[in-house]
Amino acid sequence: MRSELIEAATRVIDSGCYINGPEVAAFEGELAETLGLGRVVGVSNGLDAIRLIIRAYIETGRLVPGDEVILPSNTYIATLLPVSEFGLKPVLAKPDRATFGLDWRDVLRNVTPKTKAVITVHLYGTPSWDEEVASRLRSKGVLIIEDNAQAIGAQILNPRTGKYVFTGALGDAAAFSFYPTKNVGALGDAGAVATADESVAAVVKALANYGSSRRYHNDFIGYNCRLDELQAAFLRIKLASLAEVVERRNERARLYASLIDNPAVTLPSELPQMVQVWHQYVVRTPHRDKLQRWLADNDVATDVHYPLALFDQKCYASPGVAPRFDEECRDITRQLSAEVLSLPIATASPSDIEHISTLINAFQP
Ligand SMILES: *Cc1c(COP(=O)(O)O)cnc(C)c1O
Image (cartoon, rainbow, N blue to C red; front, side, top):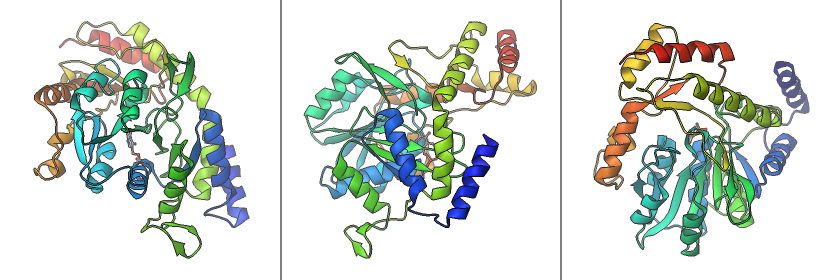
């Protein structure tokens, strides 16, 4: 991998073309091809991918400031920030304890005449999708946006067609992140937008380039959110081993599942009719802080995704920007924040996993 990356860097350096060149175009095509996506536009990072999708829907009249957007209450804040940035009203739906993504029945309960979009987040690499609810919403004109930052390569069975579909190809538009620690990681910031709607892709592409699709002619008050040639060249190499990454992470998840046996610790569900990509391997326990300390004392570094709920963040404290959510959502979300613990998975060897599982089995709350 290292020598391939150096070779790619050399190729780009020697080409003299660093922005808007052949590597970005090739990567966009390869990502679309690998995942069965429509059009892909390489962009600067995952947050900008979500921003550009929402701004493009505003420019095309599909979203208007004041519209309500439903998203899961336990996601990373980057899902929510663009909703606020563009004056849309965030509504939080409670998470499903099996997938950690949206509880789709709670999405339906939160729909009002002002609901114009839902953002589903395939959190930790598990698809969050309900074909029946999604098509009902789409028939009412509600857009479904996927935050696929953690789930590249994940798949879910479409009960209608009997075919597996990659996340990122399920909704109206999808955001990808290639932050270095994501399952496909660049050597810096990078992201992508995918959509089957050519006109939306064209607006995203223009918005990411000062609002211009023709040099010195600006249709939108845009940004500079481009993916660069060097990162695209690295990403082409990383993308080529996506299937291996998914397989390796599934092996590790299966090993944890076969070894951890402690009544105080709940394992994440391996779910039928989908391919999970295990961006995080998240266990739950009411004694989370104690378990995390026990592992740290034994030199095992873990993480918490995420320790403070969106609605408890300082930046969302004032009533003017606070998302709407109900008490049940609040309680489940706070409980998850207090109970979740992400075990090492990205680089853990089978013997690391055996060691960590033995420690967890010896843990006494
Ligand atoms: C990483 C991440 C993002 C943001 O991606 P960046 O490339 O870091 O901007 C958005 N949503 C989720 C769920 C993420 O995990």
